[in-house]
Image (cartoon, rainbow, N blue to C red):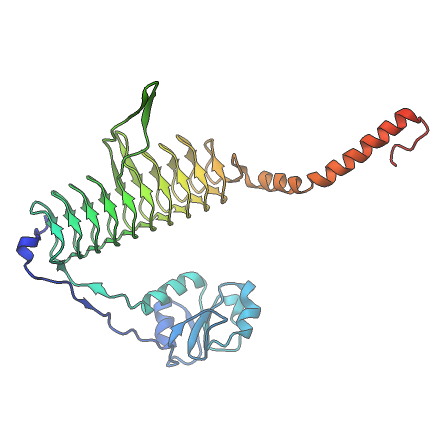
Length: 369
């Protein structure tokens, strides 16, 4: 158990911030961090990472595929991060087989994000019956309820509300105005962005002639390790069971996850997507922006759903679907293409109908006319 920190015991302890050590910005050091092959001078100094169009002679830019070749050639960047297929460009290069992964590692080295010092801000309200590790940080006006457990290295930013009996995993980070209803659990290193609500009641009612009777939701929300949930999203608690988000899943902004939903490991759910109650996403499902899954449907392992599509029936492992209702992606694309030709087909049909009418009045008329 962690040592309890409360407002009474913390006194006037504030949370100063300390800047990270200035990273080594030489091209050689960045190549080492990124696991990339260096083709150029190791001591070439890099000031920043910028886009191909905006980069200057002391900036590193990136061309992640052959599609960027012409833009890379025209760029004023002092050095480029490229895949092996662009390794013939005539400038200092970092060559990586997975350039996007290499870029992530480089940006992580350049990030100068101040980390709050351990302790609770004097304005925080930390219940005496909670457990907060001494290395955790509780920001201004945050609230930590009774029975909550905040693990080592966790960061709770300003105005976060953590309900009773919640668990915050080691190194997790809750950004301002995040709300965790009672009993919610957050795994290690999980990041929850501003304004997101986890563990709120699901949308369930018994419908009667006199009105809608609320179904009390007695379950909870459990989020695994290394999850990231974007701003202003919501993950509702289960009715009697658990709404679960698997480890490594990434959820964009403005996503709605209904009660009793189960999301597997490593899923990607893009902005404004919605999952109705008791939907199940197996591991590594991808849902495009504004897509949705109906209640009780199952999306098989590795399935992909195109943007603005609605999955109303369960789909198999590896299925790639689109449309409303969602069908096999190739079929959906052919249907959309056919819709674009309907006007021409209608015009041709009218022409044939007129020819047939004319033939009825004149048997010698040419039906193709």
